[in-house]
Structures are given as structure tokens and as C-alpha cells.
Length: 87
Image (tube, rainbow, N blue to C red):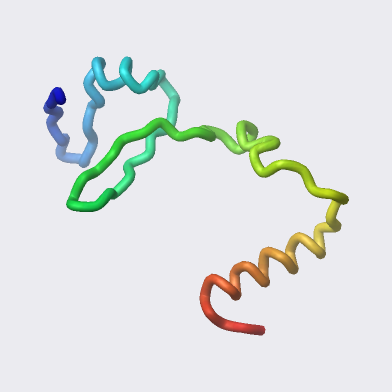
């Protein structure tokens, strides 16, 4: 295991060391994700989908196209399930 140090600026910014950027394939404009793991560990990863356009096809295909009203209803039902409330 190798440790690489970086300094936090007064604005809370950190420069990712070049060796880490190379290891993760991080390039200018890429998005990174900080994952808060067990035991106080923080993992740094490169986001799989850096833009909305890159999500195209990620969820598969629908058997049939849905109307906007149907999609909104499904989203509303999912939201209510997540909060434990019902309509």
C-alpha cells in the first residue's frame, strides 16, 4: 500500500496527486465520487456516468414506451414508498 499526501486549501479544495489521477484514469473535466465507507474510510472513484448523455441505455429498454403521465405516476409511487407514506 502506498500513501500520497495532499494539502487542503482554505476553500476546502484538494489537488489529486498526479500518480492517483493516472492510476484512476482521471482526466480534466472528469467527475469523481467520494464514497464514505465503514470504519471512517473514504474511497475515491471516477464516476461511471459523468454526464446525463452518458446514461443513455444504462437502464435497459422498456417493453413499450410510456406516456409522460405514466412515468410521473410511477416516480410518485416510488417516492412515496421511499418515505413510508401512502397517498
